[in-house]
Length: 384
Ligand SMILES: Cc1ncc(COP(=O)(O)O)c(C=O)c1O
Image (cartoon, rainbow, N blue to C red):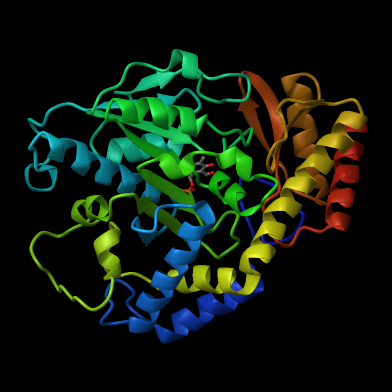
């Protein structure tokens, strides 16, 4: 699958900026074990710098801790483990030492449009993917604050910044306000949507995310670094560090931030080098341009398809477009034609009961010409 190309619009799959491929090769040639600062002081330093930059982009508190994980699913897992540590710690339960058998129960609140990866993380962390309170959502997939349940200091609320289908954002600021007034923990799954913070014209979408307690995002989607690359953050550094600890002072070092103390894994590759390289090359304006340009292209897809009389099912606020070509069979047929013809690649999805083609514009490599050729190819497939 030519997912590195500029006309790949499947799932939410970015490309890899050339500088990040070079950084990936360089880091592989260095063959550093990035889990420890002592085995890779260069990686440890680059991670520290990159984390500072990413926190700055997302407006996260300076004292928050971060870790380089494999993907947003792993980031959700690590953040939920930190939340579990903090909430059970408040009632005197040491979950790292005692586990969950016999622990006081916690309540998990998610939107009805929760991403499957959060459910996977909930099961991995011992909460159970079905033992959750689901909050109804609106037509864009945003949690309805009117239907927000009563919460307490043993509740973890998982909000979403960027729905995988519609690109919509839960009302994070309002949810944080309600949750925090009762002592609940708010976790943000922002696999790609959090990067909207980097583009001034889109930043209003992430309003309030900095009020949360933990965050999960990907670098391998919209930042366009090679797989596998995700990031986890917690407001209180100790929550992540303790949740990820091995107990005792194993290989403790004082001088540097020790990377393994913030991630589920121990030995690992130096994936932070690619994040550093991407941000170093793009800079603030380059990153803003990448995010804004891809959102603009999504808008162009929506206009082209709407103009030809097809139905766009979502408000195109970000980089995701959902389009119906009529009946489910007809829409599936158009998707198959587009994929078979090969000018571009778009996948299918079901959005609130409607079968749709999903167009995700996430790659640095996409150009105006790619978008025009792709719109034309989709219209040809739909007309034939
Ligand atoms: C909102 C959201 N959360 C989590 C994920 C999972 O990301 P990953 O595949 O990197 O684990 C995705 C993937 O598309 C997503 O859109």
